[in-house]
Amino acid sequence: DQQVKQNSPSLSVQEGRISILNCDYTNSMFDYFLWYKKYPAEGPTFLISISSIKDKNEDGRFTVFLNKSAKHLSLHIVPSQPGDSAVYFCAASARTGTYKYIFGTGTRLKVLA
Amino acid sequence: NAGVTQTPKFQVLKTGQSMTLQCAQDMNHEYMSWYRQDPGMGLRLIHYSVGAGITDQGEVPNGYNVSRSTTEDFPLRLLSAAPSQTSVYFCASSIHPDREGDTQYFGPGTRLTVL
Image (cartoon, rainbow over all chains, first blue to last red; front, side, top):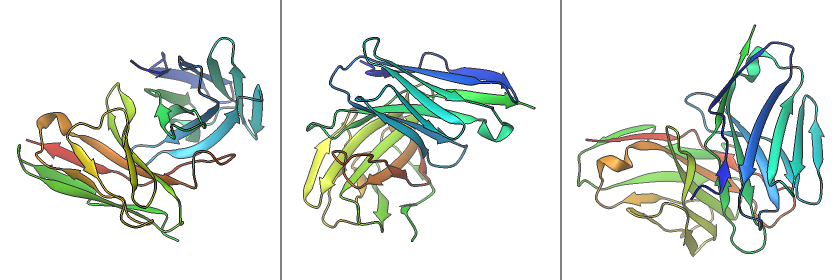
């Protein structure tokens, strides 16, 4: 049973435009969410996070939005750059006791020059 | 500061062989974890540890053992390798999941093939 889902395996966006990556979760106990970026043959690297007490967190070109009622989060990248081409994973955890970070299946973003 | 290191980078095993994937971190992190990455499956949690002497199962623990005798090291053992364990394995560490703003640092991965 996949608790964290990324339903779009891939996404192509023109350079300079907005990239929107989506993530859905089923466990209502999740209260902390993260996005990681992964290049080929490397480990994932942290991008941005959001706590369930917020509905938006921004860091430069990256913004994460959280809709708790819909159990949905999204990552917006504006403007998209060719160097953003990578696989993006969302992750979730319930900070009260289980100590597990659960990851989604990933979305491969390709930014076209 | 080397961060999270993993050895070996690549390994080929025959079915039934055993091996240990090594993971070490030099950031004094309490939390360490192992994931496997398979096509279409994302990153799946195998085992994790919240400190020396404490380990617990993740989403896909069968066929794997772990131990945490020191803060720095978190080896993953395959006792009898199976072709289904062919995957890329990532080790990660963080301060602790109940800390505000906790984030995991990942190692470069070990690509394992079981024939």
